[in-house]
Length: 235
Image 1: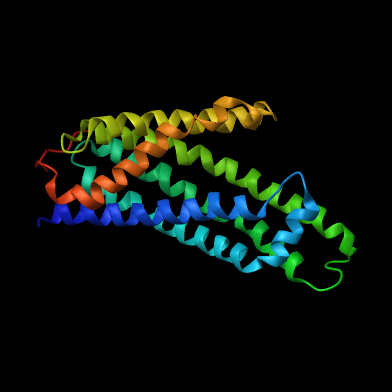
Image 2: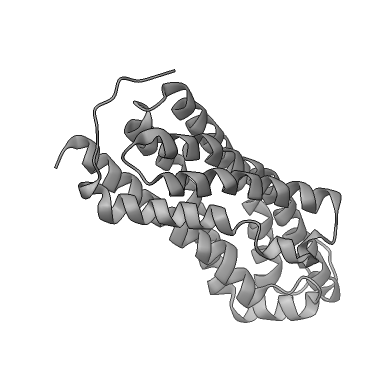
């Protein structure tokens, strides 16, 4: 197996970590524990399943750490296609990592309120559910900024996949469309507080998900069958 094919498998493996931990922390855990319109129910869920909530936080940390290394592996794989686009891909992805990690402090603060006994920071116990929802709202607001870069890095990534000659062009198109899906979602939520209730909000990020999951599996499973070609880097 050539070094380039090993890099493809490594990138696919790291991408799989990002995908699995991201689905668990951003999808599964909130669906089981968080009801933004019902602070009391959310507080009860968190008290009863604080270990699951902790696992979600740990999974988020692992996701963003893996995402720090993913673009570096992809750079090794794709820099020969276009070095400038590959560098832009790395910068946009890496910038998102601290932006994604910082909001987790709000979830850690939620743990303190949920697992504390009696009043916390002078709060009456009856106020705790509302305080928890406020912290979760702050977490979502911080993550919304990070989502800008979750989307932006997909545009140069999709371009590199499309132009590579050894990765499926269709996946490159899905990745590029995914960029605009993220941007529409972020700006939609910013400009319209009811954006999440619109039908488009359920579908706008699907192309990006298809592209990311597809390229993850392609690199992980079919990397050794891809027709890698030696190319002179372009700028």
